[in-house]
Length: 152
Image (cartoon, rainbow, N blue to C red):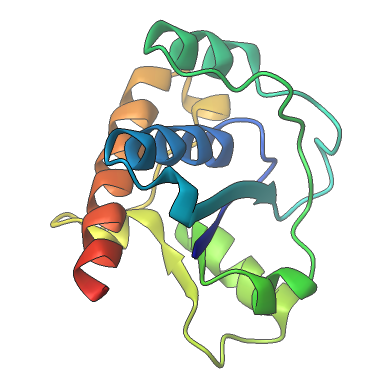
């Protein structure tokens, strides 16, 4: 069982996008039963709020439902539970490591570090460019899935 936790600032845009894109990818690969995929926030600002409406609409346009998802915050116990803790940007990775007391088991990554073009995923909350974020998240999820499957 592979356990992934995607992280962004508020858990209403990038990390739920990654969670549901990855769930769709493993379903298409026929291995969904071997994966546990969730998402959370580093901040408490959005706790309890649903996925941001433009993200929900974009995912739905791709045939992906995120119904019922509400923002939660990462907890220290998540470090031991999950195999991979994936931030959307460098600031997320830094905050995750601080909240977890470091990264002694090397579980914390930035999503696009698995691609040929490592970079941060811009927050569409601020940029308004949800399509660009979707493309980046999709690219990262494809690369992360390939990486994990190669490790098996």
